Every structure is written in C-alpha cells, then in structure tokens.
Image (cartoon, rainbow, N blue to C red):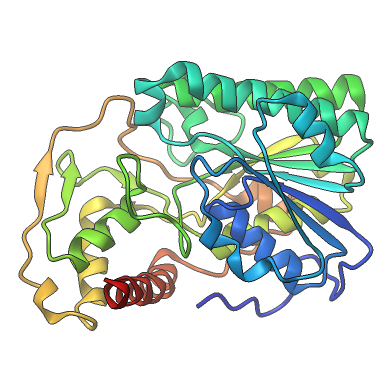
Length: 344
C-alpha cells in the first residue's frame, strides 16, 4: 500500500499552511488529502459535488481536526469564493474527465472544466491565494505524432475534453501575467492507483480490467492492443503536486509539466502484467481470454512523456515504474473486492 518514504515537500510539518483540494473526494484529490493530513497540514478543505467523487474516499479523514468538507459545485462562483477564504494553497483537481464522456456530453464537460476552472482562478485572486497547482492533461498533445511528448510541442485536440484542458492552460497563463497569480499545470499521463473507481461507463482502463479479471470476465481492449500509454502510479503524481506547490524556484512557476514516469506500456503488455499479479489471488484468472474491439474515437495511438523538464525545474524523482505501481494498486483492488463480497 502507499508508503511515503520521505516527505516530498522537504518539511516534516505543514501545520502553518491551509489547503483547498477541489475534487478532494475523487481519486487523485483524496490521495493528496491523505498526504497533507499525514504531514500535519493546518487545514485541509475539500470542495466536491460528489458527481464523480465518493464519500468513502474521504471517510477516514472526517474525524481529523484539520479536515473540512464543503459540498458544492465549482460552476457556482459564490461557492468557489467561500471555499477559498482563508486558504494559502489550492490544488485544483475537480473536473469531468474521460474523452468518451466529453464526446457524449460536451456542454457539461465545458461548463465544469472551463467555467469551473475560471471560477477557481478568480476566487483565488480575490482571496490572495499564494499558488494554484491544477490538473492539466496529456490529451493536450492531440494529434501530434512526436514521441516522447515535450511540453512545448502540441498538436490539435482530438476531443472536447482535450480542448477544455488546453483552455485551462491558456487561462492560467493569462492569470499569471495579468493578476500575478502563481500557477503550475500538471499534464497527467494515465494515472492509476488506489481509490480509482472500477465501475461505470467511463472507468479508467486499469481498474476496469482488474475488476473484469477478478469477476472472471474477458476484458475488452479497444483496438489491437498495441496502443501504448505512459501509465503513472498515483504516488508519483502526489509527489509532483507537492513539489510543484512548494518549489522555491521562480523559473519553475507559471508553466506546465508532464506528470508521468517516462515509460511506455502497450495495452497487451498491461493485461499480461495484470494477469501475472492477479493470479496469485485467483489462479482461475490465467485462462481468461482477452477480447478486442474497435478503437475509440478521440483516442491517440501512443503516448510517452519526457519528464526532463520536471526533473530539472521541480526536482521531480518518480519512485514507481508501472510494474511496481501495479503490484501496489492490485493489492488495494483485491482487498476492496474481498470487502465487497463480504458485504453481499
């Protein structure tokens, strides 16, 4: 399970700081909340409307004296303004993810990801927030065929979701220039790990495959399985967020960074890893066949990040390659599956 060997922020104590984590009941947000509370943050406030986040992700934090919860929507400016009052630092994780979701419902994706983001920037300026670190996306690279992906070389967006995340970067740049708001955007590459929901039409590929295999169902790969991704374990992502929030390097501010491990894994390879690790929990997983379907509209064929910029400017040192992260994540998913069966 998650083991923060050393604090990423260089200090043992965060008691003098207050934080807002939007989307704090979600997958990445709840892992950030866990880290902040572990290192004694003075205040950790979560803003979430629970449209994609879950109360069970934050249940273990609610008794903590530093924890606060606001149920609200980032599309409402007054809610954002209240949530930012008295806050030093904002981690903005709230968004509607998923390329297919954005294709099916571009209007809501736009309202949440763009208008909601703008609300948070404006609220942060009015409340004199010291820094905003926000979730950007590798989808911004769009149709650019270049590998690996460098931050300053992007193509045309391939989905409404990709458009919204790129607009976030543009707005952050404008707010840094006009309003002197320190921002850093993190282009996430296929993040996975504990608390990532395995259910629903828009479930991420790793928890979805794990659930299917544990249920002894045949996973369906979109395409021929040669599509590849830079799968990034959640602890690497937490480190990147913390490094970005606490960097003292002024040259590192108001920029975007690839948030990844820098390792390319095909979907066929991914499935083989999952079967290898899961068969220890269930030997009947081994003979399960894999099915292949059509490629999804809006998907890129390959994705691989160059992380040199983050290593140089933010002192980013990812600790978990994909195979190590999968071992850790699978332990969590197996335990969750056992809990679920016991409750049935």
